[in-house]
Length: 212
Image 1 (cartoon, rainbow, N blue to C red):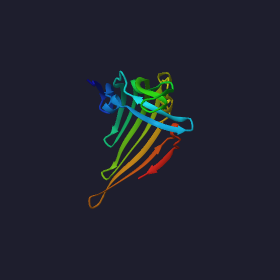
Image 2: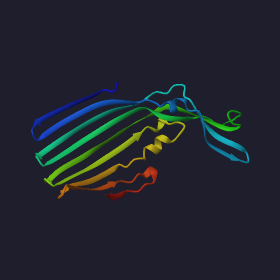
Image 3: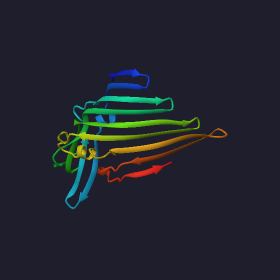
Image 4: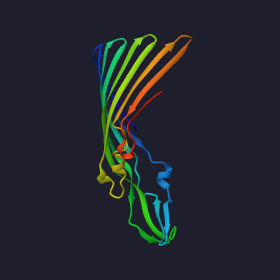
């Protein structure tokens, strides 16, 4: 069951307030539950070293509880402004438990490190978005938005790997776009978009601006 509850209030024709709460789960795939494979084998003069992913004894679905709230302002029939916020809480996130490296004869003779999927991760994301839509004329429309995102994963849930710390920085905290739609003669439509994406420090990706 993935329930959702929404509430909308319109105190005046130009103003709307809304809020919502929902819950969702991601069920592990059969591959994640039954995977048994050798990963990243390395060989040198001392022999072979490798990671072995083994099926977990207990692996639960990942869960998220999402909260949203927003406000819409309609000063005219041709212009609207939306401001919204969100807060998502994640539990039972997939992590990789890394065991101690040890000599092994099976499945391959060498130094084997056992990896097991667990649900030790949890965290949250939160942010806000501003969206505007303006119908300048029957032939021209403009829209634009700005999104601010923050992610926080608890690193204590990742005792044997660094995925929590890396994911904490694998997102762009700032995004902005402007889009134009126009109708030309002879049933021709022309759309243009300008998008800005902020830097992603964890992936060493700089900020960029693109249009199409």
